[in-house]
Length: 189
Image 1 (cartoon, rainbow, N blue to C red):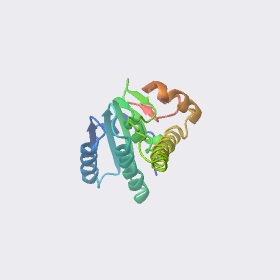
Image 2: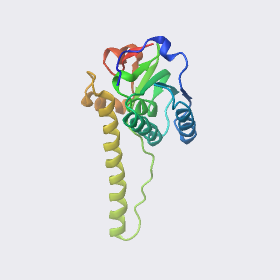
Image 3: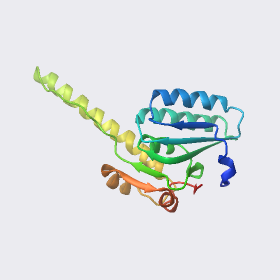
Image 4: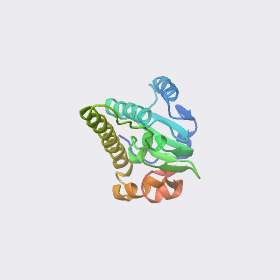
């Protein structure tokens, strides 16, 4: 795969344009546009988002990973514009570091997954234990998935997983130039 840094003209007409919440509607639009770009060697995916569903971001990311593996002569490039928050950063983590670009002034936001769930413990004690264990397993699995994404995001940069784990609980914002300096992206356009 060609890893030559891309100049601004490569981003003139992105193949995939996405904005808004990362949700199933975005996923459908993403798949439609990605399919329409089947003949492009360089596939630029431009995104602006304040976040959304992390599992949808992972589905989109897996499509990038799969397509990259299936056709190594094609180059899939991420262009973040204005705001890449939460699930948007998760999606970006699926692109090779040398294929991540941000526009001037764009902000990345990295945070932990969130959960909003009421756990009601009621009934026979063995049933209570099963409900509590099920919720604990859900939390532990979500942390594992979250940390896999963090590890993908920081690979090849000078940001450590420990640093992300320290800063993510309070929403870590990085401006495009800082993301470049830290090695999270290839360049600022």
